[in-house]
Image (cartoon, rainbow, N blue to C red; front, side):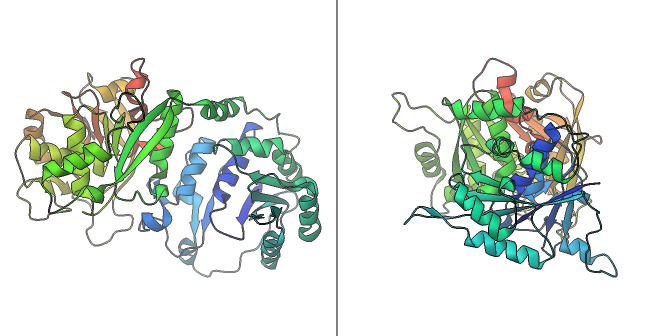
Length: 497
């Protein structure tokens, strides 16, 4: 076993995860088998109860592990399936009796440290400054780790004299100092590292020359360059609770990006905070006017104003902003705008349908209104209302198609079942399914008990789909999620969703 440890210094958010993923891409492209581990200092045993406003999304693994979003980046870049064992936190360590100080007993040629640091450029003089990295390396050495490779983030490529200065004060060879300068898209990072022979340095340090093959990044290079040439936009309106922090929906954004590139479209996301659509003093017509005028119409810069190509309502918890998401689902349904509701997004679509079509005006989820007389969404029986962590319906679960002649089944290749990842506590009330289907909804996908509604469609609409699972977690570059790719995979259409 050989190890590449990626550390970071100076400031947070430098891109340790992307750097580690990119190194993995290079090594995998050289024929080396690998996996990835994320080590976090927080005391939580997992990321399940962390606020999406502060820590971004919670990524869910096949085995139900709720982990940091960086593991999602690992899975997407490396095209691997990780488990909860690939996530280590201080909380997990403290569960082990008789904790002792960690020690490195890997032996020679088995351990490589890549330190990601910042080389800022002062606008006043335009000079790249090395002092932050020097101090960062000094702190790293104080922990008993010496960097073998420096990956320095800067707005431009490092000048040679800057590399030489870093080499002198950080005791790292000039050849092993890598620049992480600004690029046009994230997929250029592995290419940038490859151009600077980062993989060769790591392979040499780990004595892997005997098994490493020649670097092969043709597909990755093509994808990165294709992205740079896209001009024709596809506009998706994202109506969610946590839109102030884009990392809260990172996997959804990545899935949209994978689909848009497959359609040769440039992704444009219009963020809408669902709570902004709520106004207790306003009547529904006013809210619709607000949506129509400021959210779903394209700019009048074009000769012919057109609506959004699709509306997406992602997952979330709590009642804040739910009424705004219900209005978004209503607008999409009534105006034939392509709609994809994920988890809570599916639930609000069902609630809206019950209110508008069945005239059940108090229809709601018991999560938001425990006393509703028309509970469309109910608490799942095996869940816990008191313990929040790891008590949900989690991980990969199987969904069986009940209807073969439906959009979802066709998108998935007309298979009998699919396996997708879940993260929820509430679900569609099975006692109301017959009434909802009689009015026009169709629950085309269910679990093996046929009591859990997994996929809903509205067949009177060209593309109106809600899913209880999270298809974004399994989307990959070059292999976009079927539901995000949408009708473009069935017909020669130029939109995703």
